Length: 133
Image 1 (cartoon, rainbow, N blue to C red):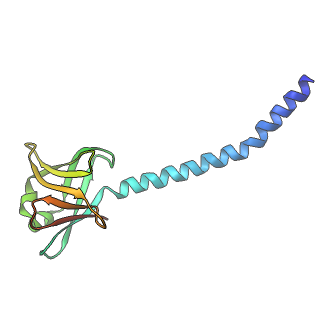
Image 2 (cartoon, rainbow, N blue to C red; image 1 turned 135 degrees about the horizontal axis):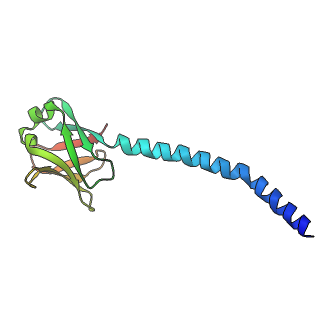
Image 3 (tube, rainbow, N blue to C red; image 1 turned 90 degrees about the horizontal axis):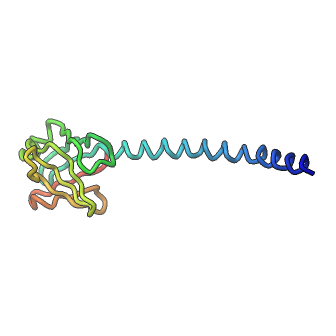
């Protein structure tokens, strides 16, 4: 009797192996696509209304960091000279984003917007938009 129960248990484990292996393989694919999605949200295109062109803004330090380094392409400063002071990308839990100067002052403040990743709240004019690249 013990032999029969042991055999059934072993067959059950062996029968479940393909499902466990498939789940692990799928989980790896999902993790990879989630990681790519997070990496994709580290680069944004900044545009300023009334001005020609756009530039690249890169959040340094990971997609999930609330405060991270900020890298602006040189053309960003030409589009909006006040961005020359921006050093950090700082998010709060309410969906607001700030580009912060080294002294802690907010250089530009954004809010989450429809159709664009973020739109500027401060300064009011000109309107600055950040779109995911």
